[in-house]
Amino acid sequence: MKKLSVVEARKKSSIGHQACIQGWVRTRRDSKGGFSFLEINDGSCLANVQVVADAALSNYESEVQKLSAGCSVTIEGEVKASQGQGQDTEVAASKVIVHGWADPNDYPLQKKRHSFEKLREWAHLRPRTNTFGAVMRVRNCVSRSIHNFFQEEGFFYVHTPIITSSDCEGAGEMFRVTTFNLEQPPKKDGKIDHSLDFFHRPTFLTVSGQLEAEIFACSLGKVYTFGPTFRAENSNTSRHLAEFWMVEPEMAFFELVDNMDLAERFLKRIFRDALEQCPEDMAFFNEWVDKTTIETLEKIINSDFERLPYTEAIKILESSGESFEFPVSWGQDLQSEHERYLTEKKFQKPVILFDYPAGIKPFYMRVNDDGRTVRAMDVLVPKVGEIIGGSQREERLDMLESRMKAQHLNPADYWWYVELRKFGSVPHSGFGLGLERAVQFVSGMGNIRDVIPFPRTPGNAEF
Ligand code: 4AD
Ligand code: MG
Image 1 (spheres, helix red, strand yellow):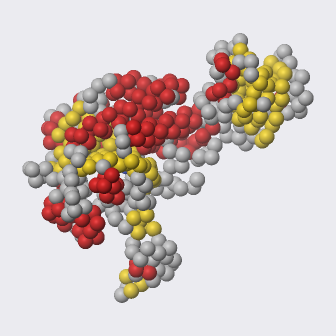
Image 2 (spheres, rainbow, N blue to C red):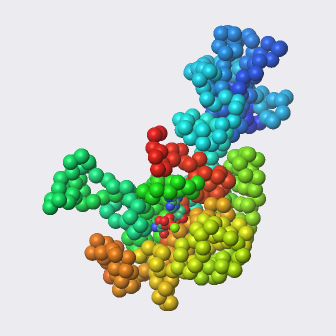
C-alpha cells in the first residue's frame, strides 16, 4: 500500500486511492453512530487529515477508543471525498496500528494553548505544535530560497571554516576552542602557552565567514557562505542568539550601490517565495501571530527600499520630536528604538542606512573620501530592526593597514587578508543576512528564540 503524507492525502487527486498514512494523533472524537474521528498530523503541512475509524475495526475498543493527543499511528484505508467542512478528503480506516502511546496525564501538548516561553522548555516536543511546525516549514523555505537565489545568479557556495583564529568583527565576542584541561592549562612565564594547544595557537568559533569568503570572491568572482556563526555577547534580547545562521555573499567588482541592489532583490525574493510556497503557514501566522504579516511583506515586495546616509538619519532622528531612551548623536551606533522609528514611523518600509562613522564599524570597511565615514550599509526592517549588515571592503593596502592599526589589530596577524590587497586587489563588497532575523520578519514571530530549533542564549544550552 502506498504511503501518503498528510499533504498528499488532503488532495482531491488522492480520492479513490488506498493509502497508508503515518503520524501523530491531534484529537479523537467518538461519534454516537459507532465510529470515531481521528485528526492526524505528520508535519508535512499545517493541516491534519481526518480519519474515520469504524467500530468494526478489530482493535476499536481495545485501542482506537483509547487514542489521545500525541499517540503515533499508522492508518491504512481509502481516501474518500469528505462531507465535512474544512477539508476535501478523509480516510476511511481499514486498519489502525498504534506505535506509541502518550499518556494524557503526562503529555504536555493537550488542547490548552501554552505560551512560547513555556514551549521553549519542551524543545523536544514543540515542533509538534502548529506554530512551531509552521516556523520550521517557513525556515526551510527561506533556506531553499537563499540557495536558489544565489545559484540562479551565478554565485558559488563556499564552505568557510567554523574554527578560526581571526576575529572578523573585531568585537572580541568569541567562544574559545581548546583541548586544554581547563583546570591545569600548560603555562610559560606565568601565561597560558597556546603553542601547546591543539592548533598551536588560540582558536575560536567563527563570528562570520566573511574574511575567508573574500578570498574566494577574489578568485571565483561571486560566492556565498551559509553556515552557523557564534557570538559570545551577553545580550538577552528578542533579536540576539549566541549561535545563529548567517548567509554571506561576497562579490568582486561590486561597489556599495551594487551591494545594496543585490540585498534588496535578495530580500524581496525570499519574502515572495515564502508567500507563494507556504501560503497555509503564512495565513496561520497572519491569523494567530501578527495580523499585519502578509500585508507588510506584500507592500515591501512592491516598493523600493529607502536609501539614507547615516548622517541624514541622525538629522531626521534629532528633529523627530520623539523622546528616545538613548540620545542620538553623530558618531554613536543607532539603538533599536532609533531603527524602529525610521522604518516603522518615518518611512514605513525597509531602510538601507549607509556611510556610517568609521569609529563604530569594523576595520575592513572602505573609507570614504571624507575620511570620517565608511562604505557600510545596514538594512533595517520594521519590528526586527537590522536584518542585514554589509559594506564595500577596503581594497587599498595602505588604507587597510592604517585602519587595522587604528583598531589595535596587528596586520601581521591577518597577513593573508592583507596580501589580497597586494596581489590583484579589486573593489569588492558583501553583506550578511541573519537567517533567524529573516524568519522572524517573515513569520512575524516576536522572539528569535522561537524561530530556531534549539536556541543558544546566555544560560541556555540544555537541548
Ligand atoms: O552586522 P553583522 O555583525 O555583520 C557581519 O558579521 C559581517 N561580517 C557580514 C558581512 O558583511 N559578510 O551581522 C550580519 C547579520 C546582522 O545584520 C543580523 O541579521 C545577524 O547577522 N546577526 C545576528 N542574528 C542573531 N543573533 C545575533 N547575535 C546576531 N548578530 C548578527
Ligand atoms: Mg551589524
